[in-house]
Image 1 (spheres, rainbow, N blue to C red):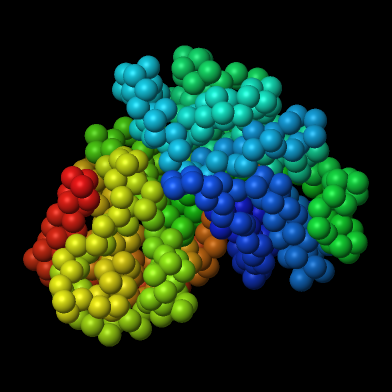
Image 2: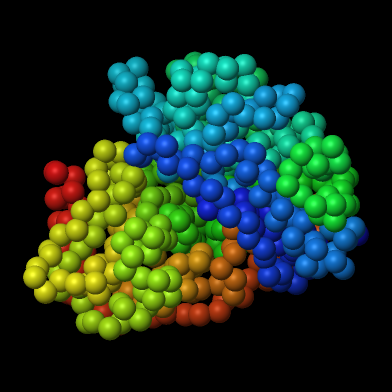
Length: 505
């Protein structure tokens, strides 16, 4: 039996690979960036071939940096950006069009069509989702209507695409958590719904087979010929070839994977991942809870025949707000500048940012609203705008947690957090203050990879039980609230007023 699980984390801006050992320790991962493509306002794309190359490169890097792991890998776990949609040829595995990324809003018009809008209640009761461009079904329909050749091709979220390519076409499967985000998957029956497939004109035989998170997704089958078609050197190709025969034994979308990695295994446990977007999930147990507040319900993971569900709120603009400050506004040179600038003033002096750069997600689900700054005065400067931008991330997450409490009647007692943006101490303290609860930052910020690795480890027997997996969790940093309830209420009311202004503009 091997000594490691290979964890692949294919994200929105990069792909990372890690090695996970039996003590639950992740090696320092390697990151390979993904090019962001913006062909039109509101459009976001990736090159599918570049996605796969980034996976190959990240794997080769982590094995090269840890040569003792060669031929010592017991299984592979995959976690991925979920709703991003790829059409590709069954034989060549190539795509005639770029991947349509989860952030992309091009299908807003499709979502407004009468035949789709009129069935919103049915869609929600079956899939746990709102009708929104966020999800894969309208992206697939857009591909069929605008790129006719895709009608004869396979359609997949990123996990299905990677499983197909890594197994050389021997397996085409997607786990329940990713299938849950297609807007065609009945989370009660854990299968695609024929009526919804008909609504979006998608053929079942073109979609990946739904599977539990811990399952055998097939074995890796690289060929030197295919690897040679990518920009890989001879050593990298040889390292990748050593994985032939290793099975993919765990797959989960990035957010449920992070929930699992955060040891949020019991009903009521919750976490927020602060990445490009922010994603707050609450474990609601083995029966789906449908929100009355515009939140989403999805299958989180399925192990040993038991499926757990999560209530989720999605913030489209999280870490991307900080990227905006750096790349477009030129107000910071590096993300760590945010801490210094935010702490240099006592408040924003009434300045609020609503970062609706690509619309607003839960609970508003408005694809057309755009971002605004409110409360500007002659005294407003760089510091106020930077702090308002960072605070906007916490305001959005606070709204989600409050709505989850309302939906479930389970009061939030502690929030587990992960993701690169957690490095901003000001944001984490402000988040704790707004929520009025303690925040626990995990030992590693790579909890999506951790969750996928733990699932893969359970899938191949690397770990013997959920109890073993639960015992591996270790916290690193804690934050406690200090703000008065009155101050929290005043700040939240100010932010909500800014949102109402954005929605009315």
